[in-house]
Image (cartoon, rainbow, N blue to C red):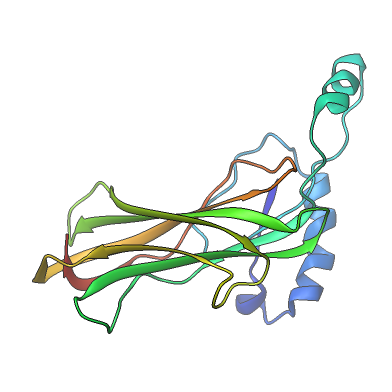
Length: 181
């Protein structure tokens, strides 16, 4: 189950947001679809289900991932030649048993003013929680046309190693760059 992290917009600290978000996540229907158009998501374990089928399912399921934040930066053009569209993704553990996660970043692009995103590059890395140097995955695509206005975004997927987590992905806000693909 994912809950939107709106700490910045609401002026709340991360701790205050989590105290408010986790009970709300438990009250929500675990099968409801999440809105992945936000920059940051907080994952919270779903409520336990009852009944024989649910008990059998829980016995064979990996432990829950707990609560973690999936995050990434807006796609930007790197300053090192050649000009390259670059996006990063990471995760931050709040609680739960996982210590490492495979973070996958997929760069998507579309010519400015058109519809339909196209996957143009993917990068993944198994990292510890935190973000920053050494704790994030990167996807890069060399700019082939520096006079073409293009919209870029990245899709970030976090899979906690050895535990069950949800399949939702985060989509960063689109950035318009002079970097054709």
